[in-house]
Image (cartoon, rainbow, N blue to C red; front, side, top):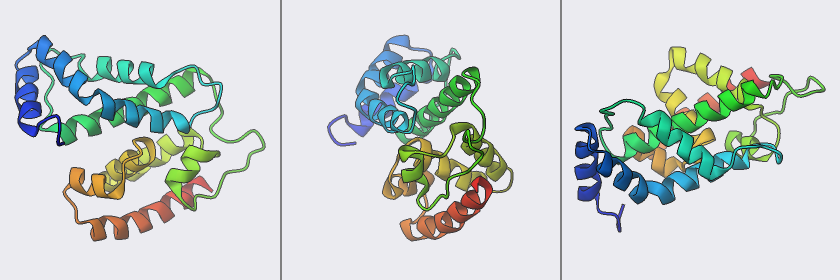
Length: 187
């Protein structure tokens, strides 16, 4: 977080929690590049004719995250993870409104060799993926958060390890089995 100053972020987070709207706007301005990058990664996984744009996704996530008077984010990582979750929910709601089927038109499902690349590339339906993530959260909430950050947020394993306070090696080992489980559910 060089360049934006971790102390500045922490100060802004405290002010936001106390209801300071100017601090809220400043915080979002400081984090805008990271939020836009996250939204752009998520939008790469959407159909070409998708009506939402990355900027609109960030704006809707902002509204969702700050709908309460005194939102609480423990730190920058927590805010970014919350933003990724809000963006995921917005995309899911948008897909539901569009009335998409949970499967491809031909009824086939796409193998999930590399879940992040498959999602970005072509084939994993956002509603099916959301259903699998909700199922995963019932027995492994931590790995459900990891999958959400990886697949929807486009975060690297290094970033996720920091956010979730896991060793990189442990995260990658657990991700391997989680990814296999998710693939079996999406096949």
